[in-house]
Length: 594
Ligand code: ADP
Ligand code: MG
Image (cartoon, rainbow, N blue to C red; front, side, top):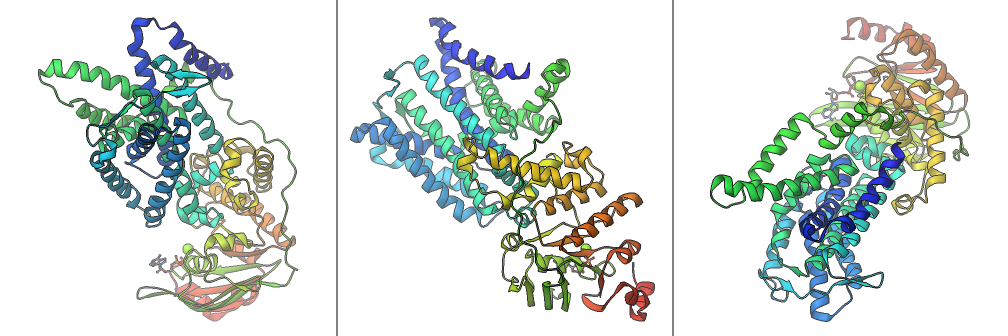
């Protein structure tokens, strides 16, 4: 049933210009504009909804597409299809440039950068003489498509909607892939994504560029539909309107872009007719109404209208609902890295000191971890255990001292590079993507074991690899005892189980050293036993495990060696039995906070 919806929708789209009578030209025009706007909003779904980056400057990219073709076709007589390639190249160059300078600074710099870019380009368009200044450029030639000159709105309609549907397919393919997971992981925070080996800066640039290119194509189409351009449609106001469309439609959903573009365009038409009559004077009053609608929607349906509508329809007509769950088909196993020899020192921490301003969180701490052993780091809260994890895994490099992993210095490397070398970790404060399934979350861990790029995934050349990645994720989920939750949203699990999801995610990276920060917290007795059993098994396979844990029974029963920390310093080191009898440790624990 559900599979029929898309073909029916496409059929309706294809028939509309044919069945609409000649007097309904207005509706064809409206649909053309909806298609053009939806293409821009779709880029925002990828950029803002999925990747968590906001751009106010999309209208300026539309302008780049429109002006490039307007100028090159009228002044030099170039073919529109050639100018499309030029426009896309120009857009890519601008997006890369803007992306490199603003994305690196992080946080709010991208939105600010896009505002500055939006404003300056708008004035540039209006002030360049060969662009016709504020009057604009006319006489743009029609596009030849399939041997036809697209002169009327009805003819042009097909080009717009084919472009939009292609963009929808590419976006959906991209999101349903290894790259899609990496892009979603951006929202889970840079620290987590990088620890899984995701090059966050690169993915941000990629989605920024793709979104800009969708906007550019929309502008190119617009110029050849109108056969005339002036700066007005590329202003910052329009850039904000594109964001409205995406947010109101549902910025996390591909079809939300179409819904938002449709709603806003129709609403705008209607309000522009109605409001001046109602108020007795002309003006852009619809903008005020948009603002109010936006606040209302954000208040009542934070994720936009698409999920709300989908939910309603599925409740009214359950046959349409997507089948939750499913199964993960068997696939060829991914290649595993060579494990170091049991007993080899794989991690060596030498005199590591970490200061945060005046606070010394780690003070000249040294210890080692061997392949095939569980080393536990214990100590009261605030002793500096998590800080040590961050020093070792590259999240927060040490102020002084040395960290060696597999006989190489790693203390100056990024966490992504360290992950690539075979170290994987969990976080004391769980960092999962709560709305994604357990399977997808765990598959992020296998990111570095795939190599297909977004070029492959957007045209589905990544399927074989994707099956193998998903199968690997499923295996790790089964291994950690979470099989029944494979298709549940990670955020719906109790916190203890979310920690286990993090362990599965870390294992999906095929590490030789595993860093677990309080893995047993929140687990019930039997779950703790199962976890201990799993860790013993991993140790048996030659993995080194560095563990922070407060549950003393758990630690004493599992660890081969223990390091005790207090106030950032190493207090003691030894076998569990020695530690249990160490007077310094007893003193610290009996008199300590824990
Ligand atoms: P533990 O994991 O042993 O409970 P932490 O390593 O989290 O301890 O913290 C050790 C000390 O370092 C604490 O006093 C904590 O407040 C401080 N600390 C940890 N991270 C930071 C940071 N990013 N900036 C400033 N202080 C920090
Ligand atoms: Mg901690």
